[in-house]
Amino acid sequence: MEQRAFGKTGLQTSLLGFGGFHLLEIPLSEASYLLNKYLDEGGNYIETAASYGKGESERKIGQSIASRREEYILATKCGDRGKQACAESLDRSLQNLQTDYVDLFIMHGVGTMADLDQILAPDGALAAAEEAVAAGKVRHISISMHGQPDVLIRALKEYPFDAVMTTINYYDHFNFPEIQDVLVPLAEEKGVAVILMKPVADGLLWRSAPEAFRYAFSQPVSVVVAGINNRELLDLDLDLAENFTPMTAAEMDDLYASAIELGDYVCRQCDLCLPCPEGVPITEIFALEGYFDRQMFDGRVGDAADYALRQRLRFWFNNKDMAQARYADLAVKADACTACGVCTPKCPYDIDIIRKLSIADYKLAAKEIF
Ligand code: SF4
Ligand code: SF4
Image (cartoon, rainbow, N blue to C red; front, side, top):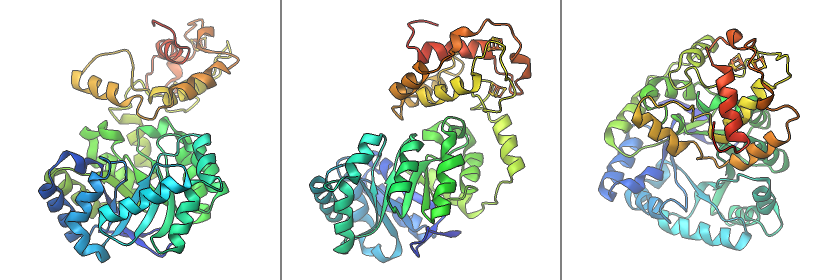
């Protein structure tokens, strides 16, 4: 399997990383089989978190592969924001993982500026991480978030992180465009490794796994972390990583145009529908809808299973309040639309803009009915 440089750390990570969250769903014997097979097949990046099952994921990893510790790069995460709690969390993690050190210690889910301020404070979690580096318990320090790129962009500007972990997939590309437009180039400029998570958008892209993984592997990232909890999935992910060929820019554009998950609802932010004679900022409103619920609720019920999955995933990133607050600040909102129909024929993706504006207004202005 291809290996890539992990930023400036000197480490080389395998293209496919093993995400440990879903180890909670399977018995230790199966977790052990999957982890060992992943290592046997050339994988070398194992990732977990203290909060996954209150250490259960870490314990399964420790019990399964601690004897092969020199064969893999080990990452765990800490969700505590204070120095003391973070130091204690790390010690528990090391015990669970049956090791003296982790290669990567990740500040977990830093989703707000207040969170970031807390970990950066003199008595914050990063002070504990730095002491752990000095003590040999941690090799490198990283940070993660779920759909709040502005927080990580500021984080990279203010602290010399070795790596950053972020959501990237072809669906959320249109919900959080700053990730690929600003965050990733900034990381590249600073030599910070990028760890890609959610290549199949929390399962939304399950029908398109080959395209979703090929898209993820084609990004300028060091490793693509996938949650793995069964043999079939492991074999598929390994096969896709081993036989990966980079996607061209033209192929990505084709995917953006034809992906069934994006369909005729998700705005591709192309601006072709503008200008609106009433001054409605169409693309800006749909971008805020992306933050609000990842444009997952479209007011239609087709496939019941797909609808249920979207209902489960739409607020995964907890950006609802932030999106509504930003919408409240817009000078012209969706309700200024007079339904003149000028914009709709200009959309190359057949989005019913008038209807979508009404749905976005219902979501973002917290209206009771649409
Ligand atoms: S239909 Fe609404 S959003 Fe579209 S151009 Fe007319 S007023 Fe603007
Ligand atoms: S033309 Fe369609 S896809 Fe492009 S910005 Fe307007 S609504 Fe979005």
